[in-house]
Length: 291
Image (cartoon, rainbow, N blue to C red):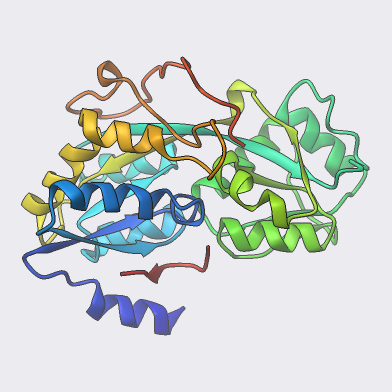
């Protein structure tokens, strides 16, 4: 970790023709970032977008320390604290997908028929079935902790495993250990062919997963970052997000929020996103510099 952050401290200082985007492992592991940045560069070939991939909590810390120019994260409560502390003027909700609870196809905890994610977590804990948590203050980890709290539980014991890894690696660990896990549906869809797991609890309101843009006040290249941010929320940017697919699939992995749901400034709270036309969507290490 120290080595990676040391590399980032030098490599992440973009020149005048580039910016550094701090983004979550799920947007990288799913392939969305590569797709969207390539589309952006078709319109803006002179502006390079470099990426630092981390869980949302660590990405927000990079935003505090001036190591990134723009953030794409999915931890709403942490984002609100970031804004309240004066580190960014606003949050711009950009897109959403869903979290899913995945696990062995045999489903030993019998969570497939659960009425809610909290009920599923209660069944897992009651039977002490293996659960692999990211344990890294990422947006996924934040949501997992909230679901344990909703179930009235604090997860602990030999059955509860913290990987400290990003979304893809965490899924591989869970698959290898025949364990349950919480993940975003886009990353799971991309990796499902190589995992021995099923999506067991899906399509519940508590599993909505909203990604937002934040522009840190410490950004070294705010004007250039604003160009990318404005493109992302434009019709072209939203179209690029909506077009992202697993090859051969008709289902979108991320849904852009409608223009009316992307206000010029959001001081707190989340917009009510539209659910129209959403298909059934369902790589990695802490804070690494990609390009």
